[in-house]
Length: 77
Image (tube, rainbow, N blue to C red):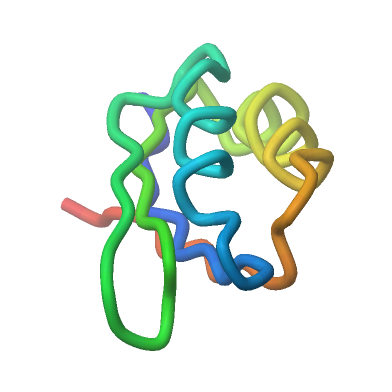
């Protein structure tokens, strides 16, 4: 069973668009959109396991310039 999660992202002022574009290019990311409210970008991603999710997706998201905070929300079935 694969792991899916939404990641809510807060960015530096004026960086939401560039962050959404950068994270959308990460393999495994299926959605990345700018939003309004307490978070600036919401993304959805999936990987074969939680270990793969952390190694291949979260580690790359954390390296994107302009991100100040993230909140990962795993999808449960």
